[in-house]
Image (cartoon, rainbow, N blue to C red):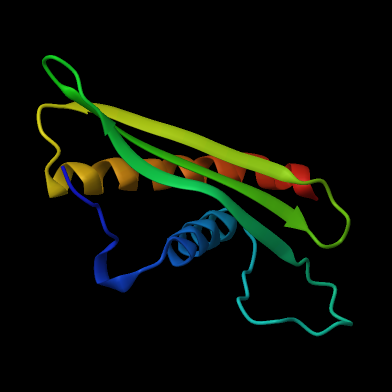
Length: 123
């Protein structure tokens, strides 16, 4: 038992921003992280991270590693808010560092896929 930390001093905000950027770019959008000019026709998205958790559930023969990510995506142009929530889980015999990395990477891929499905609804 112990704490699971992000590598290299990364924050949850940075991990979510990176995954969201990749998803939006794969959906065909150009993403800027700096403020845009007020007269610009660029869409501005606010992202609220509601949950980013990784935990395990003990079992008799195996444990279940879990990761849950939930965000609220909001366009400043008055568009609809979209909640993006995923829960990835995988059964393992032990919770090694590699197993934690795999379940979090799986969750981030699931998150990117879910963002690509929901972003068109925002516009």
